[in-house]
Image (cartoon, rainbow, N blue to C red; front, side):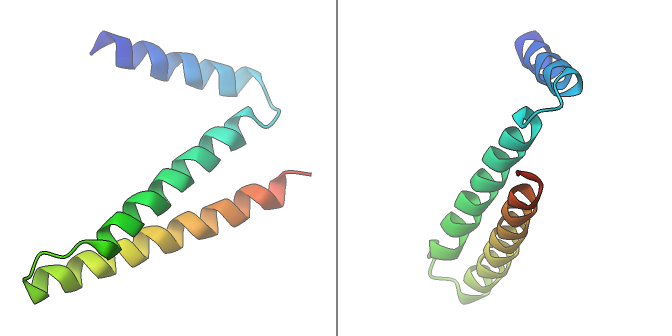
Amino acid sequence: MNRIFFYLILFSHLTANNNDTFGLSILFILFLLLIGGGYKLIRLRTGNYDVDYFTKLLGWGMATIGIIGIFQCFQYVK
């Protein structure tokens, strides 16, 4: 548990001191992970139609937020 806090503090320190694209690259990776998780939820089949409908809605929402976030990251990279 202490290692996780150490890495979080390290990343926050690096992003606070470096105003280059390091913070944007971390956001880009997080948005890619969000799109990947959304895609996994979209493709998930359980056999229960109610659960499938909910997971598809959640997956499309996650993927949409991830795509919008990636476009925002590219907007700031010059």
